[in-house]
Image 1 (tube, rainbow, N blue to C red):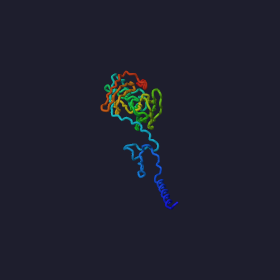
Image 2 (image 1 turned 90 degrees about the vertical axis):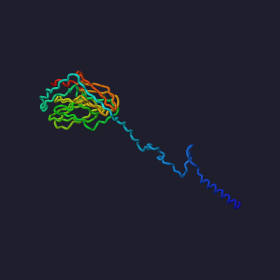
Image 3 (image 1 turned 45 degrees about the horizontal axis):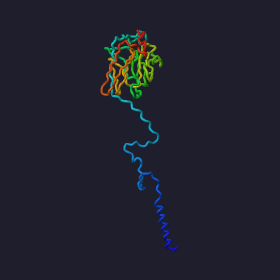
Image 4 (image 1 turned 120 degrees about the horizontal axis):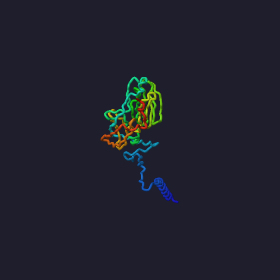
Length: 294
């Protein structure tokens, strides 16, 4: 072979080698995908997110937030009337013979009527009647034994709210509590003793004293905070109620339960009137309170 033929073959081989190196096989691509040049790197995922898009989750997913408790703007106002002849309240006979208690003549307080208005009636939206859930407030409710009487006579608490039962008297009491006919606890409380702190989930809790049998108080437990107690003038106010229609209950320890329907709006107080005649039977939760007192 001549020298010029060898030179021609060498040139052809070198050209073939150069073409093989400069054109490698392209990786397979999805049909319809746009080609990306080597000089333009792929954009990071964050750069293509729309404004306000949620960041990608990392690690364990967060628990869903609980539904918010409704914050109402409505108000329920009302009065508890009394049309009959109230029972005359006297000083309990046994009080006059009890050490320390005999020092003060305190008339009993089961029925207090002023100008046809009934005091100490507990009024609430019925249990389960308001959607939402309410944590018991950190503030403790207080029941005091003062002048050989429970004070206040009746009050409401939210489920599992702590109740401090105090003894401000210079004598021994024993706190005997009932739910219906069931004894919940019966505990002596000497003068100067620390408060008894209790919680209840539901129900009407009756407090008595076996040493001084005329003593009686009530704690009504509800699953929400929408309740009130009628004052000296029979009036009551329930605030921050979510708008809606509700069943309202009035409960008096001597005259029992009354109900009413009420519609609550944000911009105008709902008005309600309950009326007791004084002939209603004693409620099951508090039988024979006045029996043998005088």
